[in-house]
Structures are given as structure tokens and as C-alpha cells.
Amino acid sequence: MNARTSRVLQCSAVLVAAGLVLTACGSSDDSSSSGAPKSASFSGRGPITFAAAKDSSGVVQKVIDGWNKQHPKEKVTFVQLPSDVNQQRQQMIQNAETKSDAYTVLSLDAVWTSEFAAHQWIDQLPAGQFPLDKMLKPVVETTKYRDHLYAVPQSSDGGMLYYRSDLLKKAGVSAAPTTWADMQAACAKVEKLPEAKGMSCYAGQFQKYEGLTVNFSEAVNSAGGVVTDAGGKPDVDTPAAKKGLDFLVDSFKDGTIPKEAITYQEEEGRQAFQSGKLIFLRNWPYVYSLAEKSKVAGKFAVAPLPGLTGAGSSTLGGHNVALSSFAKNKATALDFIKYFTNHDSATTFLKEGSAAPPYADLYDDQALAKQYPYLPVLKKSILNAVPRPRVVQYGDVSSAIQQEAYAALNGDKSSTQALKDLQEALQKLSAQ
Image 1: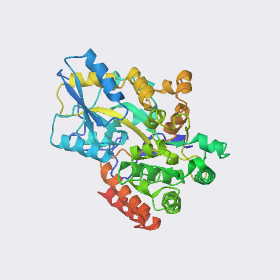
Image 2: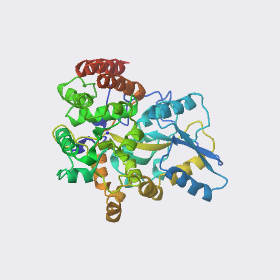
Image 3: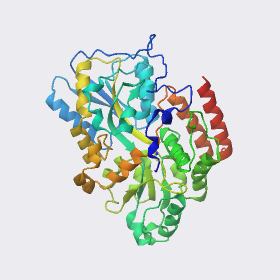
Image 4: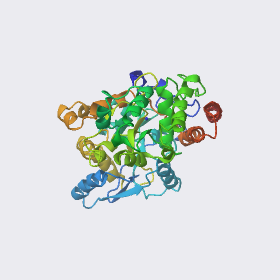
């Protein structure tokens, strides 16, 4: 996906892959011949669409139904895209490249904002019409491109460690692990229990898709390494980065991570944990409400991700809502974005979908924290998360990471060779 609070999306932290990054730091771009951001004309009212990933919680449709009831002549149709993040991005880009108006409002992974803005696939939004000052700063920063607003936070995300608190307690483990070694030691104790027969220790998201980029980056950062240095240049071929990748590679070799986890995305990991196959799982907060409705209800808890020598670092996740440049009925779309991202909607997504809210006050509400005990852990995860770069060529960067990390996990390359090849690939991309 944490003790690095200084990394909250300051410009120095997001200048990743020099030459690729076009962020709010004032880099030039091709958004127009004059370099000025593209302004939108918010006119037209009528039916619109909302394109987002398939919603396993059912909350998205519920919120949309609330809008539709109030606006019968401006109904929103929920277009559910594949669960796979790469496929979502591909379909949105294909839609944009053909200048189709099939998608009106887009749910973007937080890291896509700059890419979509730079290519003029989404419109600049009026910042003064949204309560951005009431939202967590790291989350708001993911919505900007060249210091202009191009999306609005709908949710944030921070990786957390889900664990079987009942089994740890029975095995005599008094606290959640803070290091990888502690986690493996806890597993060794739990696996001796009759109730743990056939269980595996740990899993995350390791299929060759965006989740692997996240899990690889978290492992590297949690071992004290970086994918790029403070100056924005690729710096992944280092001893610290190798320790992070080695943790994943060695865990597949020694069985800490089950072999089938090489196929896991978020949902496969969630289902494995809920069905009692895993002691520990790295996943996002949405899992919490679903796990509470499963056979492990009341038997699990969450903690910060572990690292090499202490608490690890999550990757900053989340989804931002943007307006397609090619859409019709943009006046309706702007109003829907306000509705979909307002405080009430965020509260609904939190209560019914375990979605990480962008609004700061929801994390500090004692009544909510009592009802949703993961909130303090989640807030810490988000504020201390290491952001992914907001890059125009993010797809190429992420694909390079996935290719080399997957090769190492599969045993096709050594960690040393994979990191060397990744360093070369990122350097070539940064030179383009």
C-alpha cells in the first residue's frame, strides 16, 4: 500500500521519474498551445452516466438512487467497469481517445488525475465550489494538476493489515506484529493450533496489475528504500529496495505467502481471508464491512502494515471524481459531483462500504471510531502514506514495475536482476 509524515504529497515527494512528472509544481505540459489549463463550460442539463469499477458493496448505486429520486429528469446511470484497475483505465482512455460522450463523470484512481488532465480528457473544475479545506490535505493534493483542480476526492485509501485476532490471542500473541519477522513468528505459533489447519500466513495483491505496483512499492518503502530518490530520479537498484523485494520473493519460496496468491487481486485476497485461509491480509478499508458480514465476523482486527524494522508504509490510494471533457449535460454533471462527494455521501460510503472518507472530521468523531474501530489506523495510514507519482506516462511506469516485480516473484529473475532491469527501464522512460 508508517512513520513518514513528512511525505504527504509535497512537490518534492511526488517528483518521481524526472521528465515524466507533470504535477502541481508548475511543470510545463501539452494541455494547450499556450500552456494554460483548459476551462470548461458547465452547460446543459439532462441524463448523465457515472463510470466506475464494479461495486461489490452496493453503496454506489444506493447513493446514485438518492440523486435520481431528487432529479427524475437528470438521472444518473451507473456504468460498472471491470474490477481490474488496468482494464478500468484502458476503457476510460479508449473512450476519451474516441471523444465519446458515453462516460460523463469518471471515478479515477487518485494517481490518474494528472495523466487525464494533461491529455485534456477531463475538465478543470471550479475549486471554490467544493469544501476542499475540510478534507485531508494529502487527499486533496491528488486532485490537482499544475495547481488547478481537475477532480474532487470521493474517497481516500490506505493499506491496512487485517489479522485473525482470535487465533493470535489463542496462540499467545498479545499484539499485532509491527515487523515482518514478528508477523512470521506469530504465524508459526498460530499454525500449530488445530483451528489453523490448512491456513497460510500472509497475502496481498500480487497478480500482474496495479495492485502489484502498490504492494511492491510498499515493500520497498517499508524496508527503507524508494522507487525514486529525493530529486525525482529512479533509485530502485539499492540494497534497501532489495530487502523489500526479497521479503516478498522469499515469502513465496518459504510458504509465508501461498503460491496461489500470485493470482490475487483485492477480491481474491478478501475472499481467502473471509473463508479462513489466511491469518494476515494486506488490503484496503472496504474489506472491513464485508468481513464483518462473513464467517470471520468478530474474529479479526486491523493494524498498520508491518515493515522491516518497524511499522511499514502504505501507498496512498483513493478515488477522485472527474468530468469527461467530451460529456454532455455538464451542468448536471457538476451538480452530481458536488452531491456524490459531499459530507453526507462520504458518511454513507464510510458507514455502509468502509470507504476511507476524505473529510478530516469523520476520523475524529468518537462515536464513529467506536462503531468503526479501524478509523484511527486508517487515518494514520493515509497521513503517513507514500504517494505514487502523478505522471502523464503513469501507465508505462506502472507496467515496468509490474513486469519486473512479477518476474522476481515467479522466480524468472533474481531480485538483483529485476531491480537492475527496473532501474534501466525507469531511466529510459524518464529520458523520453
